[in-house]
Length: 147
Image (cartoon, rainbow, N blue to C red; front, side):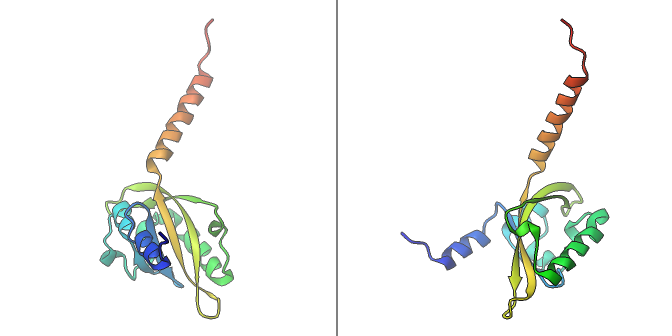
């Protein structure tokens, strides 16, 4: 059985596992899937047409927007070629979580940058486990061995 591209696209966009968020050229949300609702806690109605500030920690917003503007000006993002960007994000409750994501550029009919689609995954648990293991290893390395 061959799956049609439209059927495949519908299934991916409706997925509740990863967040899929599209933005326009100015960084306002134009698509917010069920995965984004699950991870961030905001409904699609709450997210639509809003700038991404509501999920970006305040101390990272200036850096985010500088990178976003650069991407819109150049049409290039180093996170669109398989490199994952790992950053903290905010949920509706104000909790900080860790997410990893890649970006796909959206282009207008002339091929110019017109927005982005980001596919994000909540990696908070993995990040916490790695941090705990690193701390444990560091503690073991500091403890003198008897013998």
